[in-house]
Image (cartoon, rainbow, N blue to C red; front, side):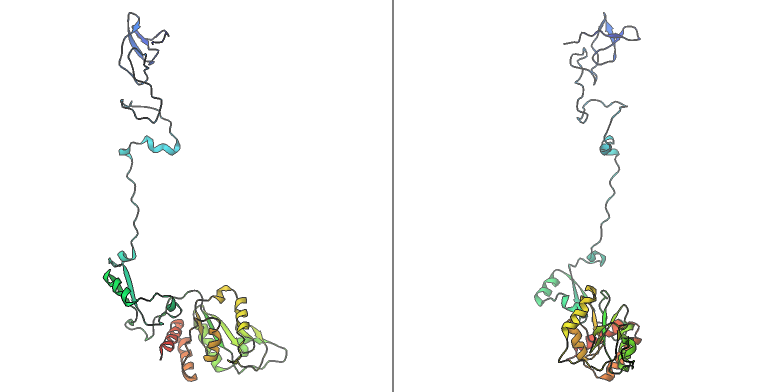
Length: 320
């Protein structure tokens, strides 16, 4: 039913403002004539206009006006942009897989290495059976042979990458510098034997090595530890392993769980070290004192002392 509100006369002659749609409309005999429906018109408007939109998000079938004012949430600003006008999303960069980096569609990598070549990491590397090897070959596999020496390289096996700081343990010396009774001197100054001097020089040549001295009386000590002179050799039949473990535990977890331990010592001292660190490597094992002195000199003078020491240890471990 049409509202009883009187039309408001506009500025133009013969037109009034329609009380329903609010637009200037022509009149006939003082009444608003039927006019084209508008978006703001109501059901009882003479123009039989459309329902006013109540939901701002409801799509409209009518024509969109040239200008409009819309209030949008800051999180819905993209709604004011037509989909065809929105910029295309930038594609994400795809990272290449190792197989793609090697330009191959292989799924497996087979590494050929000698037993014990990787030192302390060798027990951690997975071993494959003939059946698994055949299955890998069927799916495609890339072979890496690390047993071959590079042209021009020294005739030594390539060492595994260093993990943390290696611990290098050397023996004490029977020859000692005499100090007055009741006085102490750093262990590195107290021991004077030529074998000890060679071991200390080779141990300090290893990059990042943490040097320890295994003393028959004081146990595992740092080279700068003040000690008094004594006369006692390490007895392999009566080694105080509990004392050594306590000393290592007091040095911290990094020393207790050292991933790489090198014993530049003979059999008796190296066995005592291996009781604490079972993965200890022994570059001086299986040879006499003369060969040991030669190896210590080569380690100290080598361009890569750690690689040389590990190569000697690998050669000693693989010798029948």
